[in-house]
Amino acid sequence: MRNKLPALALCLLATPVLFASSVPSMPQPSTGMNPQAEAIRFFNDGLRYRDRAWKAQKELATSQDPAQRQKLSEVVRKSFEADARSQRAAINHNRDMFQAHTELGYALRNTGNYDEALKAYDTALQIMPNYGEAIEYRAEAYLGLNRIDDAKTSYLKLYNGGAKDLAKQLGDAMQKWVTNRKADPGGVAATSIDDFAKWLSQRSEIAGTASAGSSWR
Image (cartoon, rainbow, N blue to C red; front, side, top):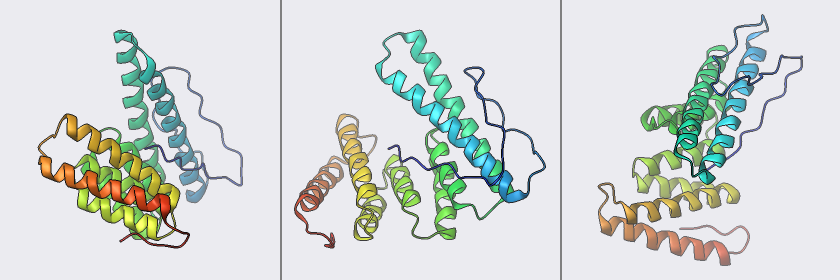
């Protein structure tokens, strides 16, 4: 699910990243800024690569031409790889930048590197334990690894913590997981898929009827 991290503001001017070709460039070299400003610059560079990946994904969803689809798939992959490089550069300048750790996890997850993505999310949550975006992103990585119990725990934490929009995003990702696994179990037992689908249906019903401030159990 696309959960958009905002760009971070700088208190000084920085040269914007321009996309002159379909292949993302390497992170820009140091400009002599202080480490905090450099971290923000690299973080924002990464978000531009992520946005480029999102644009290509949107085009990919509607394209029917095999050659165009291959080209767009490459743009998506290379853009997320560039995003990951930029976020690592940001972290090198500010290891406590939980937003960069979170976005690094997102970029890694979108290149299929789930284990490293989880490490990035865990680091973000060590720095900022209740950061909702990292909780939701990490839960989607759990789904990618078929760790549905961990994903359910994350859902309840978001919902009970008041992050209802993020909980809904995760619920949508869970429903997509159920649909995909029913078509291709991928090693998951049919009973586990059915049980998770029932749990998700119950929680969706509760979300539609629950009063403000109530919790899911």
